[in-house]
Image (cartoon, rainbow, N blue to C red; front, side, top):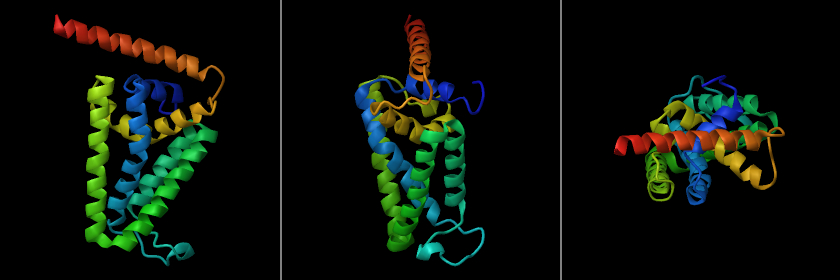
Length: 193
Protein backbone atom coordinates (compact mmCIF):
# COMPACT_ATOMS: atom_id res chain seq x y z
CA UNK A 1 0.00 0.00 0.00
CA UNK A 2 1.33 3.37 -0.96
CA UNK A 3 0.34 6.59 0.70
CA UNK A 4 -2.22 6.67 3.48
CA UNK A 5 -4.06 9.36 1.52
CA UNK A 6 -4.01 7.66 -1.90
CA UNK A 7 -7.73 7.48 -2.68
CA UNK A 8 -7.14 5.51 -5.87
CA UNK A 9 -5.35 2.71 -4.00
CA UNK A 10 -7.89 2.62 -1.19
CA UNK A 11 -10.83 2.55 -3.59
CA UNK A 12 -9.19 -0.14 -5.75
CA UNK A 13 -8.46 -2.31 -2.69
CA UNK A 14 -12.03 -2.07 -1.46
CA UNK A 15 -13.51 -2.29 -4.96
CA UNK A 16 -11.68 -5.56 -5.66
CA UNK A 17 -13.83 -7.14 -2.95
CA UNK A 18 -17.03 -5.47 -4.12
CA UNK A 19 -17.69 -5.90 -7.83
CA UNK A 20 -21.00 -7.80 -7.81
CA UNK A 21 -23.80 -5.21 -8.16
CA UNK A 22 -26.06 -6.88 -5.57
CA UNK A 23 -23.20 -7.02 -3.05
CA UNK A 24 -22.44 -3.34 -3.67
CA UNK A 25 -26.13 -2.50 -3.15
CA UNK A 26 -26.19 -4.49 0.09
CA UNK A 27 -23.17 -2.52 1.29
CA UNK A 28 -24.71 0.79 0.23
CA UNK A 29 -27.74 -0.04 2.35
CA UNK A 30 -25.95 -1.50 5.40
CA UNK A 31 -22.53 0.14 5.87
CA UNK A 32 -23.70 3.53 7.15
CA UNK A 33 -26.14 1.90 9.62
CA UNK A 34 -23.17 -0.07 10.97
CA UNK A 35 -21.24 3.18 11.43
CA UNK A 36 -24.29 4.81 13.05
CA UNK A 37 -24.85 1.97 15.51
CA UNK A 38 -21.16 1.76 16.39
CA UNK A 39 -21.48 5.41 17.40
CA UNK A 40 -24.66 4.50 19.30
CA UNK A 41 -22.68 1.86 21.22
CA UNK A 42 -19.91 4.39 21.88
CA UNK A 43 -22.43 6.98 23.11
CA UNK A 44 -22.49 5.04 26.36
CA UNK A 45 -18.73 5.29 26.94
CA UNK A 46 -17.52 7.78 29.57
CA UNK A 47 -16.99 11.38 28.47
CA UNK A 48 -13.51 12.89 28.40
CA UNK A 49 -14.91 15.96 30.12
CA UNK A 50 -18.30 17.26 31.14
CA UNK A 51 -19.82 20.19 29.33
CA UNK A 52 -23.17 21.82 28.82
CA UNK A 53 -25.22 20.27 26.03
CA UNK A 54 -24.26 22.19 22.88
CA UNK A 55 -27.27 23.48 20.94
CA UNK A 56 -29.51 21.72 23.48
CA UNK A 57 -28.44 18.33 22.07
CA UNK A 58 -27.28 15.44 24.27
CA UNK A 59 -23.81 15.40 22.71
CA UNK A 60 -21.09 13.64 24.68
CA UNK A 61 -17.43 14.23 23.92
CA UNK A 62 -16.21 10.67 24.29
CA UNK A 63 -14.79 7.90 22.12
CA UNK A 64 -17.68 8.24 19.65
CA UNK A 65 -16.75 11.87 19.06
CA UNK A 66 -13.08 10.94 18.48
CA UNK A 67 -14.06 8.22 15.97
CA UNK A 68 -16.31 10.70 14.17
CA UNK A 69 -13.52 13.27 14.05
CA UNK A 70 -10.95 10.76 12.72
CA UNK A 71 -13.27 9.52 9.97
CA UNK A 72 -14.35 13.04 9.00
CA UNK A 73 -10.80 14.38 8.76
CA UNK A 74 -9.58 11.29 6.90
CA UNK A 75 -12.37 11.57 4.31
CA UNK A 76 -11.75 15.28 3.71
CA UNK A 77 -8.02 14.58 3.29
CA UNK A 78 -8.77 11.84 0.73
CA UNK A 79 -11.00 14.06 -1.43
CA UNK A 80 -12.17 17.53 -0.48
CA UNK A 81 -15.54 17.46 -2.25
CA UNK A 82 -16.77 13.91 -1.57
CA UNK A 83 -14.87 13.89 1.72
CA UNK A 84 -16.81 16.94 2.90
CA UNK A 85 -20.06 15.07 2.24
CA UNK A 86 -18.63 12.04 4.05
CA UNK A 87 -17.54 14.21 6.98
CA UNK A 88 -21.02 15.75 7.17
CA UNK A 89 -22.57 12.26 7.17
CA UNK A 90 -20.21 11.23 9.99
CA UNK A 91 -21.25 14.23 12.08
CA UNK A 92 -24.94 13.60 11.33
CA UNK A 93 -24.47 9.98 12.47
CA UNK A 94 -22.75 11.15 15.67
CA UNK A 95 -25.49 13.66 16.47
CA UNK A 96 -28.26 11.22 15.52
CA UNK A 97 -26.77 8.37 17.53
CA UNK A 98 -26.37 10.71 20.51
CA UNK A 99 -30.00 11.81 20.33
CA UNK A 100 -31.17 8.20 19.94
CA UNK A 101 -28.90 6.99 22.75
CA UNK A 102 -30.16 9.72 25.05
CA UNK A 103 -33.76 8.85 24.21
CA UNK A 104 -33.41 5.05 24.51
CA UNK A 105 -31.11 4.90 27.52
CA UNK A 106 -28.25 2.47 27.95
CA UNK A 107 -30.21 -0.77 28.24
CA UNK A 108 -32.46 -0.33 25.19
CA UNK A 109 -29.83 1.59 23.24
CA UNK A 110 -27.29 -1.21 23.54
CA UNK A 111 -29.90 -3.80 22.53
CA UNK A 112 -30.95 -1.78 19.47
CA UNK A 113 -27.33 -1.20 18.45
CA UNK A 114 -26.35 -4.85 18.84
CA UNK A 115 -29.43 -6.11 16.97
CA UNK A 116 -28.71 -3.68 14.15
CA UNK A 117 -25.05 -4.72 14.04
CA UNK A 118 -26.04 -8.39 13.84
CA UNK A 119 -28.54 -7.74 11.05
CA UNK A 120 -26.20 -5.53 9.01
CA UNK A 121 -23.13 -7.75 9.35
CA UNK A 122 -25.16 -10.84 8.46
CA UNK A 123 -26.44 -9.08 5.36
CA UNK A 124 -22.94 -8.15 4.29
CA UNK A 125 -21.58 -11.65 4.80
CA UNK A 126 -24.49 -13.02 2.75
CA UNK A 127 -23.65 -10.46 0.06
CA UNK A 128 -20.08 -11.70 -0.06
CA UNK A 129 -20.89 -15.39 0.16
CA UNK A 130 -23.85 -15.53 -2.22
CA UNK A 131 -23.24 -12.69 -4.69
CA UNK A 132 -19.54 -11.85 -4.57
CA UNK A 133 -18.09 -15.31 -4.02
CA UNK A 134 -15.21 -13.77 -2.12
CA UNK A 135 -14.45 -13.18 1.54
CA UNK A 136 -14.95 -9.61 2.80
CA UNK A 137 -12.12 -7.06 2.64
CA UNK A 138 -11.96 -6.91 6.42
CA UNK A 139 -10.40 -10.38 6.46
CA UNK A 140 -7.47 -9.04 4.41
CA UNK A 141 -7.02 -5.61 5.99
CA UNK A 142 -9.27 -4.89 8.95
CA UNK A 143 -8.34 -1.25 9.52
CA UNK A 144 -8.55 -0.27 5.86
CA UNK A 145 -11.87 -2.05 5.43
CA UNK A 146 -13.39 -0.29 8.44
CA UNK A 147 -12.04 3.13 7.50
CA UNK A 148 -12.91 2.91 3.81
CA UNK A 149 -16.28 1.14 3.89
CA UNK A 150 -18.47 4.22 4.50
CA UNK A 151 -16.48 6.34 2.04
CA UNK A 152 -16.49 3.58 -0.58
CA UNK A 153 -20.28 3.32 -0.58
CA UNK A 154 -20.60 7.11 -0.61
CA UNK A 155 -18.36 7.29 -3.69
CA UNK A 156 -20.35 4.47 -5.32
CA UNK A 157 -23.54 6.51 -4.90
CA UNK A 158 -21.87 9.74 -6.08
CA UNK A 159 -20.50 7.92 -9.16
CA UNK A 160 -24.10 7.15 -10.19
CA UNK A 161 -24.52 10.92 -10.52
CA UNK A 162 -21.34 11.24 -12.58
CA UNK A 163 -18.96 12.23 -9.80
CA UNK A 164 -15.29 11.44 -10.30
CA UNK A 165 -12.70 12.75 -7.82
CA UNK A 166 -10.45 13.72 -10.75
CA UNK A 167 -10.38 12.95 -14.47
CA UNK A 168 -9.21 9.42 -15.13
CA UNK A 169 -9.95 8.19 -11.60
CA UNK A 170 -12.56 5.64 -12.66
CA UNK A 171 -10.41 4.17 -15.43
CA UNK A 172 -7.33 3.89 -13.20
CA UNK A 173 -9.31 2.30 -10.39
CA UNK A 174 -11.07 -0.16 -12.72
CA UNK A 175 -7.70 -1.28 -14.11
CA UNK A 176 -6.34 -1.85 -10.59
CA UNK A 177 -9.48 -3.69 -9.52
CA UNK A 178 -9.33 -5.95 -12.57
CA UNK A 179 -5.64 -6.71 -11.95
CA UNK A 180 -6.32 -7.53 -8.27
CA UNK A 181 -9.31 -9.75 -9.13
CA UNK A 182 -7.27 -11.62 -11.75
CA UNK A 183 -4.44 -12.14 -9.22
CA UNK A 184 -6.97 -13.37 -6.65
CA UNK A 185 -8.55 -15.78 -9.13
CA UNK A 186 -5.09 -17.11 -10.03
CA UNK A 187 -4.36 -17.70 -6.32
CA UNK A 188 -7.68 -19.51 -5.91
CA UNK A 189 -7.00 -21.71 -8.94
CA UNK A 190 -3.48 -22.46 -7.73
CA UNK A 191 -4.81 -23.56 -4.32
CA UNK A 192 -7.44 -25.82 -5.91
CA UNK A 193 -4.90 -27.67 -8.08
